[in-house]
Length: 421
Ligand SMILES: CC(=O)N[C@H]1[C@@H](OP(=O)(O)OP(=O)(O)OC[C@H]2O[C@@H](n3ccc(=O)[nH]c3=O)[C@H](O)[C@@H]2O)O[C@H](CO)[C@@H](O)[C@@H]1O
Ligand SMILES: C=C(OP(=O)(O)O)C(=O)O
Image 1: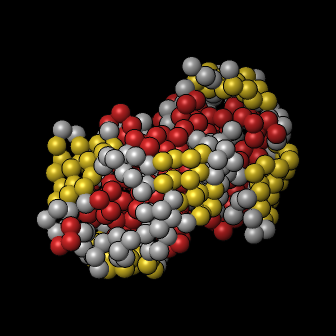
Image 2: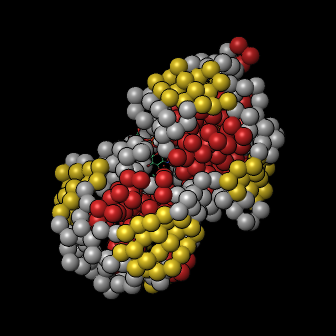
């Protein structure tokens, strides 16, 4: 099994390009199922989850052509299966995003229930309730969600007013895609406002959908009869960008991120400034300068535009070597502190009480062998390894390949000593 080995203590300098966002690419790849003609996507990051989604779509009969330059064409004109099997869904929860499109376009879907994962139980009840509100008949049988519109007028989903009592990103995306081909108008209330939801809406609109309000907490979707392919560039990955910003803040140095948008990272940038880093930006670059001497910063995760849960572990890493004590509060997922024990193995001082971690900065971390438990936990261990004394070995790095394109190549370009073995 592959490992990452990092020799800590080197500052980061130079510039790198930020990839397209995993969390935008996954729903937009699934949106190809809605289109009667080919959809061409560019800036698609080469990631394990993207590969899994392409395999899942190919399993359904979508013809996937990878152009090799981060562009891919998806032709869903001849779908042969409406099923997302457990074997694929269990490796990637975002597979649930085929449910809305399959049901809306073909009137039937059979999608394995994703089950829990390392960071929490992660139910999909709001996806199911929303589709039921649109008239779908849904049963859970043998671990699969069986959904049909056979009994509905024209066998189509019906527009509805849907209130989601918890803000859900993929739930909003699934229902927005389903509503795009429903009869009538759907109102998604308490919708997620994440930039990836906006990117999906923009792509759907280019495909012919009638959507208003994406990026606000009420999204209105006027259903249309059919959608066509288009060409779309995936929005930049704000979490990847945020991770490299934290890396430079901790290691010290001066880096510039190209194809990065500061307007998508307000909460993260504010916290980095509070910690003592200097940050400047243009429309599509972000630069950071740091001497590596940071002040602790407390964070509390919440839906966008508040501080993202996908940056929580990275700020935990930052706080381990900052001056002072900070609290890190996780409000989205009930079990997203798996990195704490691994950081403690590097010498971090962290106490966890419920959903709150109290981190007391130490003078230095010491390299050790640690284990990656989920995607962002892995990233946080890389950050810790960049500043730890001596060598840090990170095992189970397949998690990191789900969400960071060529991470060791990008960090090496910035001057880090990191290799995959
Ligand atoms: C592929 C993708 O985009 N993944 C992101 C997405 O995950 P994902 O869309 O799975 O996360 P959600 O926004 O749905 O989850 C938010 C909260 O709602 C709960 N919930 C969600 C759906 C539901 O039907 N019932 C329910 O109770 C979840 O358990 C969680 O506590 O948003 C998360 C929160 O920003 C990010 O960490 C993930 O990186
Ligand atoms: C939790 C994440 O992803 P997913 O929802 O795909 O598990 C993430 O990107 O940090």
